[in-house]
Image: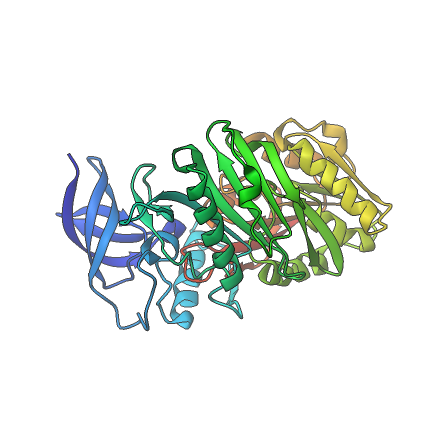
Length: 423
């Protein structure tokens, strides 16, 4: 049986969660600010700590300003928080994470975004019936796979055009009576080109008149079946099945189901610092290379680039992006980073890593220590796992100040960049 309780929160800790106490026992929740009180549904109750889901904030901080969407706790709990204070809180988390005695790293400024709403190039919704019984866009309650909250106007983290397209797609899906079969409805946007791509993913194959989903204004619509996590089988499409984004002067294409940075303008600002740190003329290996973004941008200043990516589809798109941009000193290798042939890293003067939130696989850390490149450039979406990896790499490398980037205003997340040189 889950318990609802009132918690006063004191500070922000790792991964942006707020820390409060229940009878002296730590309680963590996503969303509250220091000094705020909230009604919290306890979702994980352990002897030494508890975790909860915020139902409502009952005593708000003076730092909360303006109005927020009804669902803001689910998508961007700091959506209505004074932006300078958001940056201050994120920098404090980064300082505490990197400044622990066993690491002792300094932190540069937290670089803020110019756009704090409408910045996402991807909006992904679940669906459920609204009060009138019509199929509607929805978000999962934080930490729940079952509880869904209708978002009748979409989400302000995406553009007006993205939300309009998502609403048209869900209305068309409702006409086809696809509700129970739908896994998600997604709209992706090329920030540079303005094109929109609509994706309807299904839990199981369904027969339908898919042309009903051909929403005007979309560069393409894709219907796909979910095979397993992050893997899809295309059932039907009309128009484009991918988008092209301009980054660092390059035209980079990516598929409907592929990874691409969520906030391209902020990513470019991080990329500037990465490129400034790449030694000229070296052989560079780009681990977790995706469709080639970092490696291809670096190709103009190094002798050779090897992009390493686990997903074969992304490798094909990376190779295509090299051809598209006339880059001849880039090649892509299809391999999980932890199972990479050691010869690929051997002789590299610089290695760039941009892993998922779980951080580097222990075998990757071991391989880096064995290959001993002169410089490692580590971009992370999770400073906690980055700090763990830097601690191990610290046996042979020294990091300069860690830089923070607010790729995700209004949310609890950030990116951090560390430049490591062999000692």
